[in-house]
Image 1 (cartoon, rainbow, N blue to C red):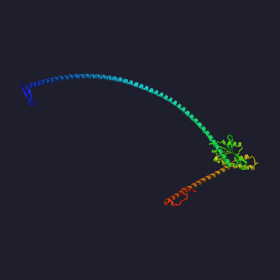
Image 2 (spheres, helix red, strand yellow; image 1 turned 180 degrees about the vertical axis):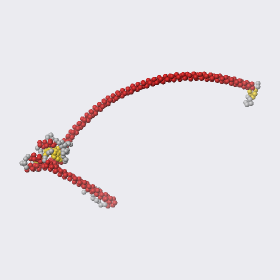
Image 3 (tube, rainbow, N blue to C red; image 1 turned 90 degrees about the vertical axis):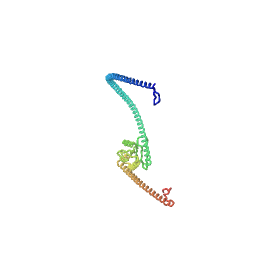
Length: 379
């Protein structure tokens, strides 16, 4: 057996086995190469076959796809046509539904409008009835209030008239103690007060009838009524006392159609003048007892223009004197106020000077000044 030793590892190798292995390896390699060549050829042929088959299959698939695409295109056209028809139907259906909805909404709106109108009518009627009831209540209350105010005003006017009548009665009795002052009883037709003028010897010289009015407006009917009362009472001079005078009077007292009209503040002055005239007429009547109807002469005199001018002149003189006294009083009061202010200023200035001096020299060094000390009173 042929052997050799490996110089690298020192292992003994049989040459025959090594050659055999190499030959075997070469044969195997040659067979493997041949096999690989055949395999490659088969593989190539297989690949060519596969490629031809794949191409055929691909062409078949493409043909099929084209046929399917054409079929799908035709189907799509049919579907689009069908879809268009369906869309048209849908639009028609929607339009019909919308029209139906619009019609329903319109009917509903009309019904709602009718309901609202009915409700509004009912509400308006209810409101009208409520307003009518409230207006009736307000009217009734206003009527009751007006009645109450009218009654209160009547009562107030009556009370004020009674108070003014009592004041006039007391003033006449106080100023003319020789005369008879007789109030007319309530409910009896006639004036309010009958004033019989008497001389100091007790001789009746005439009668003054006083009518007192306490209203906001003048009534022309008062004058003929008082003249009728004058005739009934056989009196001589009629007088109406009122805050509101006839339009034709320009002053607070005057003669209107045979009746004297005067404001309350001048009543006693007019009574004094009328009384003096009646006393004068009484004296003239006593002197000329046989010169005719004395009552007629007295009435003619006290209602004459001459007598009214005399009375008005006397009233003007009294008014002028009163205004002069008022002016003098106002002037003196202004002068007194000015002097009082000046005196007060002088006193305060003196007190300030004394206070300043006491501050400099001391309070104990200053003599006491009467009137400027605490507790001193004015003499």
